[in-house]
Length: 109
Length: 114
Image (cartoon, rainbow over all chains, first blue to last red; front, side, top):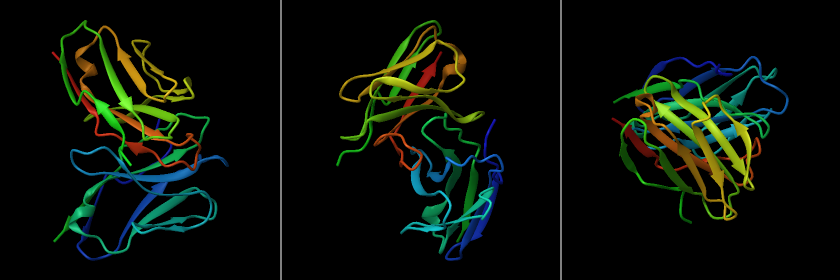
């Protein structure tokens, strides 16, 4: 069973911010929260990860709830190239990695 | 630096046959994970190898096996192929497979079982 829960799909307008939610209520203290995305006909690519604090990189921001039971991936200004399936996963060295079905993000021009 | 490479990119087999897929990780990466992706089940974790040892395993039957060589290259083998094994098989490498470690995925091998 997936350790994370995400909406099946979301829509956003181009050049607007996008907030992709993820619930992970059974997260353990050693689990890192990772986000990957998969563009059509490609393997997944890393987006961002965090443990407890909010994180920013050139692609996105990750906001982690104080109790760590949920997180939100923020794309600050969506472009058509951001249309993909976004996966939120929990990762630690001692456990198998479970990808859920992810959120299919549609960007409207 | 070169990314993760997988060979072959496409493969057609018949039921009952066996197949071996190969993955070359990014230079310096010691952890290699394998995933199966199908439209119905999504991305499913097969196993992870680190320093030639299987460290984690998903819920797949024993027909699915793998190994890792001293140069970190990895192979996975599927014996007695079934129609349901048709899928995209993805390999991902990371430095040491820790929780904070970023995984780099290859382009995948598309296996079709007839």
